[in-house]
Length: 152
Image (cartoon, rainbow, N blue to C red; front, side, top):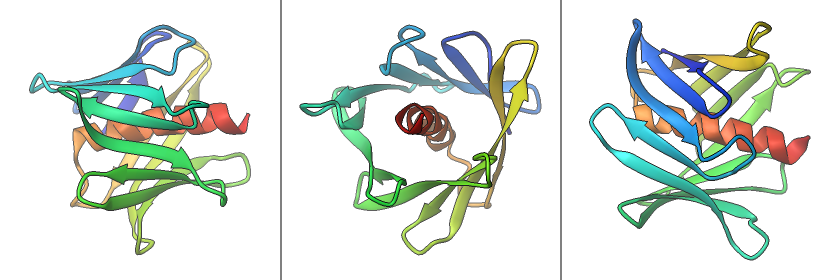
């Protein structure tokens, strides 16, 4: 699987040249976004809290996930049913992003590749056999973009 940035607002998840879903920002400077999957599932992503300190993800107005930065510089992703994951950057120049579960097991690794012609990042994705969830992969791309905005 890989993530390709189509334009300033849209990232597309593909596998074997077939589109599986996309992440679309409301505008190029907004933190609000929408994940649309090929099975017509639509998820809304928006900042929340008094200082917009965390982000929530909803489907049909029901909160299904939220995430925020912890004191270790990791993004903590909390999904329904008390599942937590941690986004960590690896490498000297943040050359890889890894999502781990509470036990420290690597779930997904996203490796950014800079596209000089479009002046943006595309991502190569590797994962363990259990984590082929299209929603979670697109959410991981949003989390990486959010993480980069927070640390820059």
